[in-house]
Image (tube, rainbow, N blue to C red; front, top):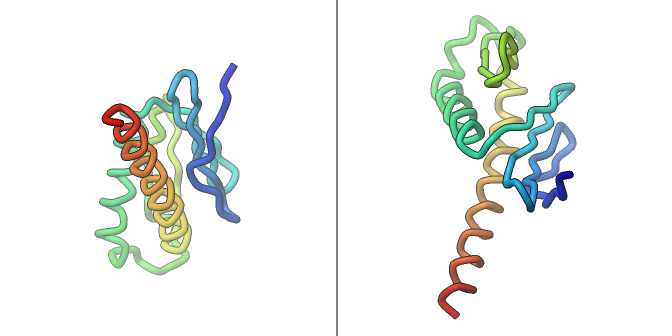
Length: 110
């Protein structure tokens, strides 16, 4: 059973990491995804690519951004504002993961 550590928590979702198996759970809107760190990094890269093309949407409310969830036949479909909120959540989680990495490496050296 997973014992989660909070990486990011916002009104629209959260990102947590299992302390035991190191899987990542991402909740955003009405979707919850559990994935390996490798799949999570790939998902984050998709969001980054979406942010680079955010102004290509036909209009702000269009569900123009399709993100592979790495679950068979399942995509996350977002509009511009949702993509911006997801990006902010993932950035907060990335900061937490980096701080954990730095602290863990300082424990090894100390």
